[in-house]
Image 1 (cartoon, rainbow, N blue to C red):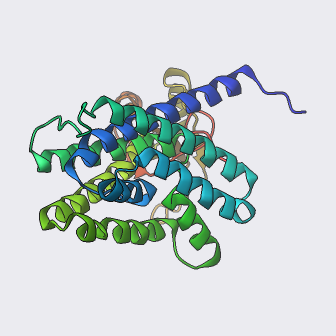
Image 2: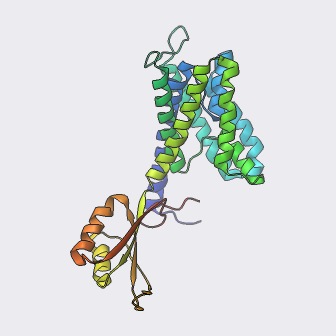
Image 3: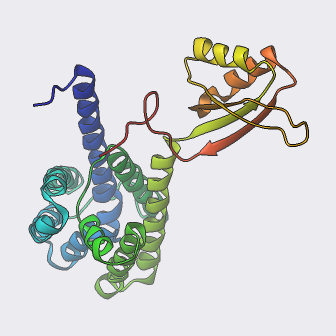
Length: 296
């Protein structure tokens, strides 16, 4: 049995707490800004909303039942590890949706509209909260099941990306709102809410991984590298460069850093060699020691 370090245990606990927090945010957005305004989100939560509007059956129950059925079907295809992780997320989402919905349901069974009749604001807030919540969950390695399962199965056997498969499934589910509510404004708001949520998911995931890459050419590269190692505690890699015009060897420093460290690095380079040639670019993600851990 492999020994698990205290640091790894703490990191896993942090991921669990982040996933739970993301699911709570998602459930609040769904129960407080989507259900009271008869809008429909994508995925199984959207199916749950449609069934709720027609029959009054609680969406938290629908969410759990459909996901369990999908997981049983997908167990052999996607593996036991994915199934267990998704099942835990499904249970938590179902519980949190039920709790959040109970808080905004009045004694007569109607749902309280927190921001009155401002359907557009509900659309925006619903998309923001759902997107932020899902982004946190995905960033921490969690899964909410639903259309994720369908998209993963499609991706396994067809040459189509998970993102595109999810988009196609969600568009179909949201479109069903017209046949249930029969209100064009609500349908359009549902589409807008879905697009806001999708973009917020991307923003949360990519925004937290904003890193920068420096390529530094300087005759004082050794001093710059030493200062970056010592003062900023960042690693440097020396690449063998060759100036085509000068026909001379030009060592190039490669430095990966967080975006907020940009000014400190520029200040340091300017102090050591104001004439240094520096190229900086954004990178989508950096994984490894000092950055994001590599997810299995």
